Length: 251
Length: 253
Image 1 (cartoon, rainbow over the protein chains, first blue to last red):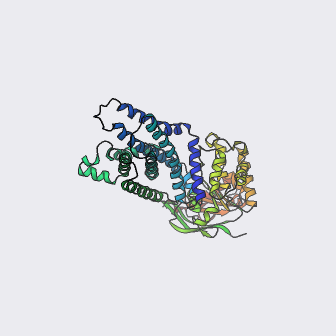
Image 2: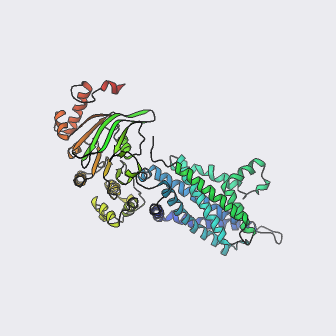
Image 3: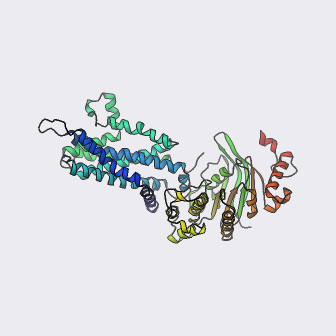
């Protein structure tokens, strides 16, 4: 691992994104717009007094799910391009270490994800008065970890796609089940045993759990840190797997 | 002649079930331009990929600058320019060269010099994707030059270039060789062979001959090197009188 090469990669990936105004706009604006839609979707719900708004639960989870989905897509396509354009093979003939490349990518997209979740969280708090007990800083933290998770899974999945079309098909396979089972639609305790067991090993579940901890407690709880740790472990594990798909030699 | 920059012994490379290279032995002199010539499908690219270390070798060995091909210390010293230009089309010319340069601690001067060396100074701030085909492949070359490699492996660098640019590029290669760089350049345009000090003639995964352009003209009985190459192939198919691995009957099996 060499920091100069890692940061050169980060700068290069951000430079590539900078030239792509439309993608930057999509990354920054779309989550905030969808959040707006979610807000108005539940605008007319009638609640018993003292009962939390659905938006406070669903909107909060959306803040963590958006960066995951967006970064998964952006990364898997970018990395696939790197593989098919020959630049990856060329890079691997230079002294760059695989970790420099992967972490370079992860850092670049984490910066984008942090900006994205800052915008979305600001909108949720200041415009729609998202009402949770914990600090918004923790929400952004979980959102960024989720984004890095998306990056790691995207890097890994790009190895199994030959075309951009195939890469996009990985979304229903990798991303949608996690969204279905993470506890957003049905609380995990109400799932049948099989689904609950599957849910228990999917990374997104831990972030939803973490967000619920943030929503319900003023200070950071032990469960929050546990969830964070588990997600961090999963991210590192997936990045290691992804590095195994980068081969300097083909047979 | 100084020591060999590349040495292949009993080199076999198969991809999947296809045997692409079937027993090559040769040495490439350092500080010279060596041409790798042969029809398309003869195994030129596979051989070059083996030399830069991205292609696994099935049998035999390649040593590059005294080390096993592909070993880590060589990554600073070997430059590889692939046939299709492998650069980032959504980055500027300068950003591309700077990024590849960062892998070799290249300075801003190195970056500017490599861009100038391929005549792209006035395009430095332009997006690579907006360059013409010839400019695009010269950018790919600049990304290799920035590392100041001791060995530069170029896969069909002049494809799609107009005659003026082709001549300029060959002048550049000759200058580099004079400065001590070893160049291995593949081409299927036989007239380019005259720029090389030594030629490797590849056909069907076998080395037909290693010779100088003058020897090629003589053995192929023509000053037109393309005709000379064709004559050599014909002779090789006919019988053992003209060349060295002239065993076409084995090739067919």
